[in-house]
Every structure is written in C-alpha cells, then in structure tokens.
Image (cartoon, rainbow, N blue to C red; front, side):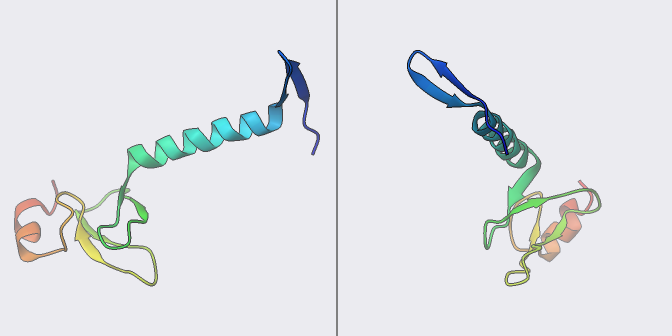
Length: 84
C-alpha cells in the first residue's frame, strides 16, 4: 500500500496512517456512545432492540444483566423495567 509522505515544518506525515488514526478514533467514539460494558467482563455490548434483559455475547462470560440498571438480571428488573 502506498502512503503519501508530506513534509510540514520538518515533520514527515504519513497521510494513510493519519487517516487510519482518524477512523479508529471515530470508531472508539461510536462504540462509547452506542454500547454499555458487560458488568462482568466489561466487553462492549450493543442493544439493538427488544427488552432490557441482556446476555453477554462473550462465550466465556454469558453474564445475564439488565441494560437499564446494570445489575444481574433479577425479578425486580423483570417487573419494573422489562420494556423501558
């Protein structure tokens, strides 16, 4: 892959690397805004509809929790905010 190098006040800028860094930062911001960490393993989890009952997608975790309050899924969550 070709990377264009520009000289700016004595510094070399790799335009491809700079563009990649901007994309990575934008991705991190999107993940931060659209996910919540699993309360058990902290992997980012995205809710795309349905009720508040979540199950961590990580095979080694599978923690069941409430999207609304972040606690382990329980009868109170089921009764108070199943579909908030």
